Amino acid sequence: MYTVIALAYLVSACLFILGLKRLQSPVTARRGNQMAALGMLVAVIATLFLYEILTPVEMIAATVVGGGIGAVLARRVEMTSMPELVAVFNGFGGLASALVASAEVARYFSETPAAAEAVTGGAPPLAPLTLTLAVTVAASVLIGTVTFSGSFVAFAKLKGLVSGQPAQFLGMRALTVLLLLGVAAAIGLILYGAYVFAEDSAFLMGGLLGLGGLALILGIFLVIPIGGADMPVVVALLNSYSGLAAAATGFVLDNIVLIISGTLVGVSGLMLTRIMCDAMNRSLWNVLLGGFGGADDDDGPDVEGTTGGTVRETSPADTAILLTYAEQVVIIPGYGMAVAQAQHQVHELAEVLEARGVTVKYGIHPVAGRMPGHMNVLLAEANVSYDQLYEMDEINPEFPNTDVSLVIGANDVVNPAARTKKGSPIYGMPILDADASDTVVVLKRSLRPGYSGVENDLFYNDNTRMLFGDAKESVGELTTEVKALG
Image (tube, rainbow, N blue to C red; front, side, top):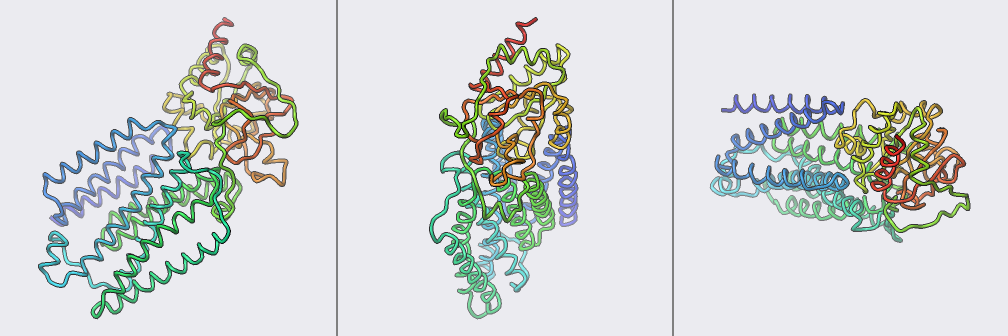
C-alpha cells in the first residue's frame, strides 16, 4: 500500500511541475491547469488512504460536494470578480494549512494511546516533537493565518466593501511593531513548550493560540495600509504566502507532495510578485509601506479634471472614420473594459476592422486590471487570437507606426505622467506609449483618475480624443458605424 501511495505522490508531483510549465503560454494554460488539478486530486485521495481518515463513501461524498462548489463558483463568478475569488482562495488555502498544522500539534496532547487513536483516526504515530518541528508548526500557523486575514482584506478592497485608499491612523506603525513583537513572543512560547513538553504542554498550547490570534490581526494591519493600485501585487504575494504555508505544513506532516506543491506555488508567486513590481518600477518594500491610490478607475460618478487642459471630445461616427482609414490600430484594454464586460464587443469590432484590411493588435500592460493576466483572460474568453496579444515591451516600438490607439477603460498604464512628472506617485512606472500614436481615442465614462488616484495627462494631449460613455455601448456603436461605412 505504501509503495502505491508513494508512486501516486510521484505522479502528482510530476503533474504539478508539468502543469506549471504549461501555464507559461496562453495556448497551453488551460491544459496545464487541468493537469495540476488532476495532480492535486490524486494527492488528496492518496493521503486519505494513507491516513485512513475517511471511508471510501465519505471520500466520494466530500469530493462531490467540494467539486460541486468549485463548479458553481467557476460558472457563476464573473471575470470582473476573478481577482476577488483568487484572494478568497488564497485566504482559505492559508487557513487550511494553519488548521492542519495545529491539528497535528493537538495529537501530542493525548495522554494515552486510546486517546491518540480517537484524535488521529488511526493515523501513523508522529515523531517526537522537536524544536525543528515546532519551528515548522509556528511558520505554518503564522504564514497561513496572516494569509487568511490579509486575503480577506484584499477581497474587501477589490470588491469595494472597504475603501481602496490606503487606510492608516496615528500610531499604526507602532502598533504593527508591537504585534510583531507579540508574534515573536508567541513563537518563543511554542519553542519553549516543545523543549519542556514532557513536563508541561501549556506553553505550547498558549503560544499556538496566541500566535494564531496575533497573526490574524497582523494580516489585517499589513494589507489595510496598501493602496488599491497595488492590489494586483498584493494578491500575487498572498498567493505565494499560501504556498509557503502549505510547504511548512508539509514538513509538519512529513508529506512530500505537499512540500513540493507548496514550494512550487510559493516560489512562482514570489517570482510573479517581483515581475509585477518591476513592471511598476517599484520595490516590494515600497509597495508594502508606501501604498497609494484606490479610486476605482472608470467606476464612479462623472467628474471633471483639474489640470485645466482642454479635452477634445469625439463621437462614434467620427471615430469610426478614423478606424476605417487606419492601417494599424492598437487596442489597449483596462479595468473599465472588464467592468463593462465589453471584451466580446471589442473582438467583434476588431474582426470588422480586419475585414477591411486594418491590422489590429492588442497592447497588454503587466498590471492592467486587478490581477496578473486579467486582460489576457478576458480577451481569451472572447476568443481573441493569442497571436494578437502583445506585451508592453513588444508593442511599444509599434506605437510610432500606429494610426489609432484605442484605449478602452485603461488609465494609469497609459499615463505620460509616469515619464514626465518626477513628483507623481507613478513616476518611473513603465507604461504603454500610446501617446506616440498619430491619434489616441480614449473610451471612458468620465475624466475620473485611475486606481492610483493620479490624473491622466493623456486626456489633454493634442492628439487625444475622448469618447465618453459605457465601454460596451460605445464599442457597439463604433462597430455599427464602421459597418455602415460599407
